[in-house]
Length: 289
Image (cartoon, rainbow, N blue to C red; front, side, top):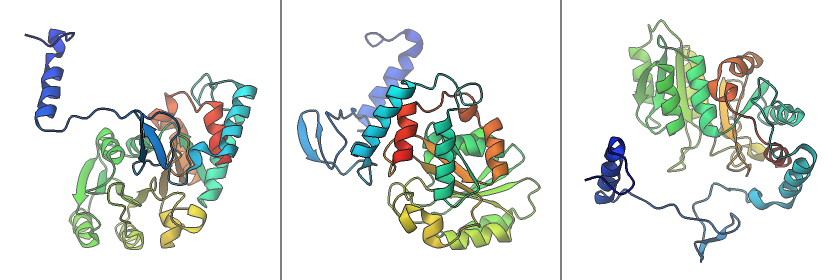
């Protein structure tokens, strides 16, 4: 007997859902009625909202609203193409320049989401002969990027620099490239990576140093420049990933680093190559933010 509306070939999905329910892991989407604010209306009930990524409250800021509306009136609702064909608008380049300056980096590329930025970058810069050394609580987008790269993955205990060095010592003779990667601020507990110590290890063992700064950009460091600024390690982190959908209040992700890194990602990061670019309203609102 199959579930109502389920084809026999997909019956296993219904069974998986039922299994989630028995384990109390099944959830319903909570529908927001109105604006994303500290006090918000979910399905007719007004509640104190402690679950949003809208850290600075910019999603409803008048300047962002105005920028989005003006851009829509002038340029329409979509870019109409991927960046590499006909979808790079002047405002996309302006946004990338602005983010690079904000992060004190040479260059920047904007992705359609923070998830795409992490997964697309790791899978582009590494291959099957390479090695990833990753904190055990790194974000899912990092984990998926590592898997897509086909590189060997070694995990060290959360924020344990001694365990990280153990892994690096065991793999010190690795012939391929090595990437040491961590969240700047970890998404579930809010704890901060020990970037100075990790940078020391990356330099000692000749690793590419990469951080996901999604939850600290706009919050930590001077003017919200993130954990690199907070820890005083400018110039020691090769790749900085961030998001435009949290403190910035809009949507998207970005990668900051050297000009060569960004030029390479323009041509090899698959989410960038094969996804339509930000609509004018979103790009303009990011700039305003």
